[in-house]
Length: 57
Image (cartoon, rainbow, N blue to C red):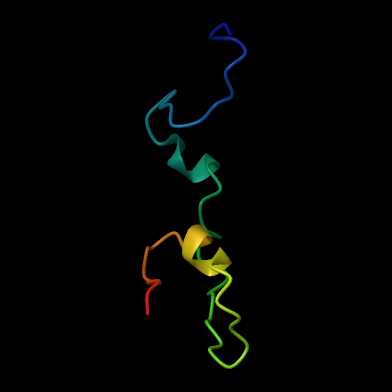
């Protein structure tokens, strides 16, 4: 892969370009654990980005 093939990511091309990056919707949805519907499959544990769900007895 050449440098021309790499997509633009965390690169500062010029000062003040942060307004061009779309970062405002990272927390537009908030996951909620419904213990009444939980079947203990572990999918929430795998995908939780904060690590706030614990598996155990």
